[in-house]
Image (cartoon, rainbow, N blue to C red; front, top):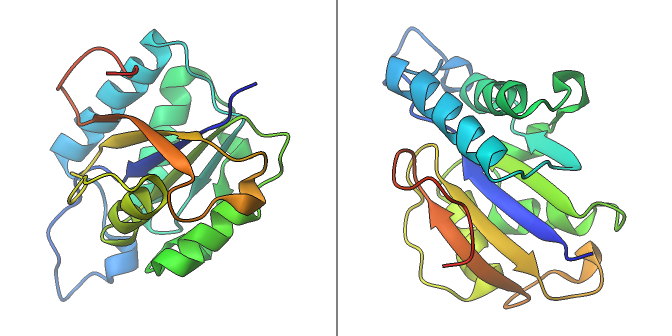
Amino acid sequence: MEAELFLIRHAEALDKSPEIKDLDRQLSPIGLRNSSIQGELIKKNKILPDLIVSSNAVRAAYTAHLIAERIGYDTSRIIINDEVYEASVRTLLNVVNQLNDELNKVFIIGHNPSISYLAEYISKSEIGDILPGSIVRLKRLTDSWSLVSENTCELLSYNYPGETDEINNE
């Protein structure tokens, strides 16, 4: 079966504030709505991940939970990975390289700029800054997650909340 990686930037968060640590920032009302929209879109397209990995930041974990609830994915199976928060591209790539090869569809919910840089690095596509709540769908061109590196994935689609009702090859 064809393996696919879905790189998802957390949905819109509340503005930074000196009273709240960045790690603890919540989703904004728009972020809450957009997470649900993206979850419905994923469900409509009959995409069910084998694994969801999320940053430990509240805004990313909550994005992951809202999407999981919409698609019927058991939220207790979401892997919260501290390395995804403030990750370098190398660290994020390492998360991908450590995935079990039995996993065919993997969602990683993270942050800019690393999520955008990783998508461009592994696909050699010009994507730019991935917008909050957006989904980049990539097809793995290697036989193993451990071999994913520069130009080893094909960009299938880039979708931002409310843009379209499909996450398919364009």
